[in-house]
Picture 1 (cartoon, one colour):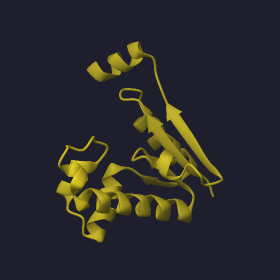
Picture 2 (cartoon, rainbow, N blue to C red):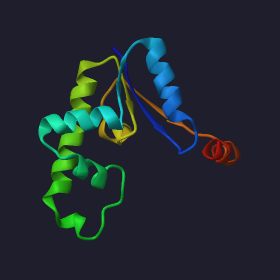
Picture 3 (cartoon, one colour):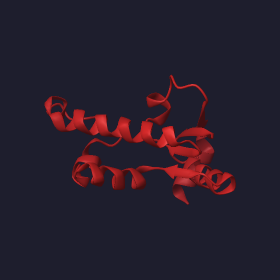
Picture 4 (cartoon, rainbow, N blue to C red):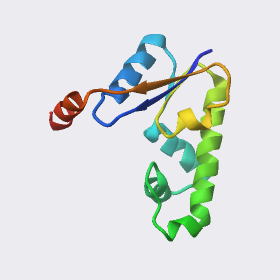
Length: 122
């Protein structure tokens, strides 16, 4: 049961590649939208997800327990998803959270600056 994490550069079509891979190998897919559903089950408001998701926290956010709670549930959700296997985890720091697990394939999608700029404007 494969577990694949996909990280990508903005404009590299990494999201599209991950979705296509998921469709072709018939596996589950974890991304921002599906994580929001999991967080709702944990009782974490969508506003907190938006505030902390892949963003550098403001100076006062560092001292809030919401950030620690968000990170705890993010890691829990990623580990639980990976535990079931046969899945692709897009972004959300999956490559870092699962870095020490054996049998996880970490993929980084990159593209030239010219390609990324072209995709960004299309």
